[in-house]
Length: 118
Image 1 (cartoon, rainbow, N blue to C red):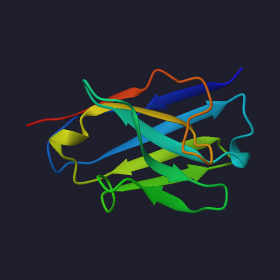
Image 2 (tube, rainbow, N blue to C red):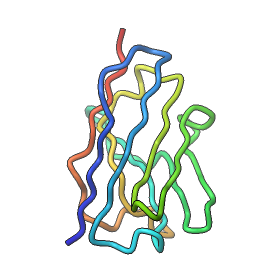
Image 3 (cartoon, rainbow, N blue to C red):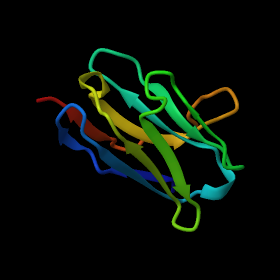
């Protein structure tokens, strides 16, 4: 059974940093492109960062230069280092696979809440 468990969220002031983790089980983690998605209140869930099996990374313009995605295949864990956080980064953050068309293919986890406020 596939399970994706996100952690590391919290309340942080603008300009601060957080590191999110996503522990995956029930899948062959290393063979999947993985990504971080987020859903802000009243908005659709969006893909913001992706990590391919070959080690390439891609970012949405809104987080480029501030967020860094990484993965540890041995631990089946995906990370998101978030720096220079802004109030508009407030959202629930999820991890999932990323298909060639940019679609998540696994059951969603519970996500982790990130709130950026002073």
